[in-house]
Image: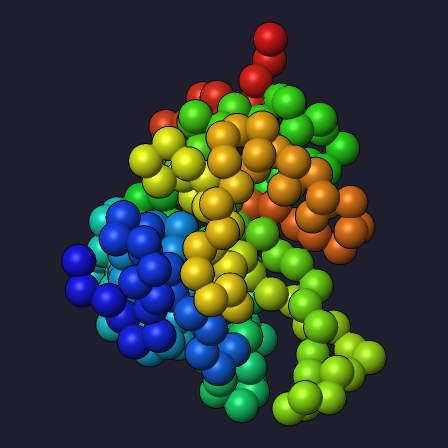
Length: 207
């Protein structure tokens, strides 16, 4: 598999893109999908594409046919005004929808024991991230997208700010990681699942 610019080939079987600009949403998408399917240009198109130019808008399996969000907005609410990325959750959800996948918000009030991990393709977390100016840490926090994914039976933290994928271990390991992240209070968890899993609701254990 070819590596995208900024990808870290630390483990042959684990695809991991490193942070560039404010493209953590793009990196999280590619990392959770374990291949380079999206770019900054593709994410920008999702934000602004004119629906009149599409004959098969939202066709499953084609990232170029993801749904349109704000085609007529000069100041697009779904990305940075500076053109450096900083995409919001609507871009992530639309991108995955274009591939025939679905997303489900995890209700933090539920115990993590109810999360049916074998039914989940991957997870995308939105976490507070400290800001810095060079070596100077600033008393500000921005939101950061992070992907978690199982590869060959091991769950990995594929945060694009990491030098390499961080092995979390088995289901107990990823649940412990999620518990720690949710304990911060500002963490949101998005489950990436198939349409069938979303419709049946089997991402949630009822036993």
